[in-house]
Amino acid sequence: MGIIAKIARIDKKLNWSFLGFIFAALFGGIAVYTEFIRDTSPAVLYEILSNAKILDVKEDVTGLNITYNNEDIRKARKTLSVLIVRVTNEGRSPILKTYYDNASPLGLTISSGEIITAEVISATTDYLKQNAGISVRDPSNVAFSQMIIEPNESFTTKLLILNPEQRALTIFPKGKIAGVKKLLLVDRQSEQTKETFISKVVSGSLWVQIVRTLAYVAAFILLLIVVIVPSVYISDKKEKWKRNGIVKQFKSRTDSQLNDLNVELYDVYKRNGLRALKGMKKTLGDDNRLQSFVRLARAFPSETEAIPDLESRSMVIETTSDGVFLHPAFALKSMIKLGLISKVGEKYTRNEERIKAMNEFVRFVVQQQGRNKSSNE
Picture 1 (cartoon, rainbow, N blue to C red):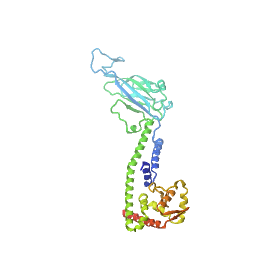
Picture 2: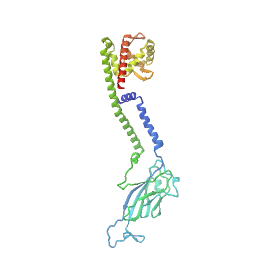
Picture 3: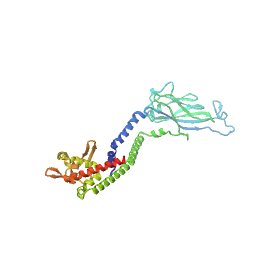
Picture 4: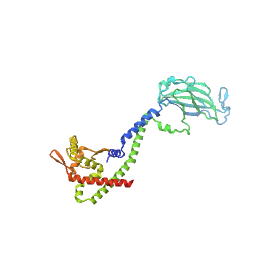
């Protein structure tokens, strides 16, 4: 049996639309994420790409003097460091010039030392190369110019810093941009830098997210199939075993003539269960019902040309509180093959002997299933 057939059987067993549930969960989840969870505001990320000392003399060397502003750097226990920082808009919306706060410009502050020089050394677009600027406001602060930064665009700055040898050098983002809740900082050189769980989950481009979503959905469907299909298979085997037992009990309690009339009917019951038999019993209840059913079956002329094998499909379309609904064309062929009705000219007549034998078997099955249900309760 193919996977589609298995899913269809699961759908009937559980009394809900299996595929409908899957697609509702998928598209409902996407809608909730898009409308309520996904953040579409801009996001500013500072990345420390390099933090290296360019002057680090450990030993005293006679005659070596390094001065800055008439100060001997070695005697003052200071060093020169180069700090390279990249600033990126990692959000899903652009940063416009009107988003900047003049009273709190975007920039950075160093933890210690003095900024000697600062410059923009690269950018991802020509616009940023021309408009990205940096200025030293005081020895420990720099400010960036107000510019438009589209999503995933960035510029990189280089700072030359004179700082104490024994003190670690780092930076702190500063400034205010409308819509940006927090300025983020990542030290790419630090071994202690760890991605948060959320950043791992949402990292990647749009195509990465699409592929990831499809993979999760496929895994979810596969998990459902792995869990549900075996249980349905076991349930079917158990049900068929019960049906075989009921058939054996009925054969042992009835005469051989009744069993001979019901030989093929037993096979229909084993494959389709009591529903199909109840549907045929209702249809053959009287001549008027049979003729109405025949007229309905003739509305499917392409399906009434030949009598197919009874194993080819189930004749039951639906079971409701009002009764069992059979597929008209196929059920008509099945009842002919079972000998329950005969066609004489253009009219169909009932075989009362075979119908009586079928009804006896149906009553027995109903009683046995009722007893099994009571014993289980």
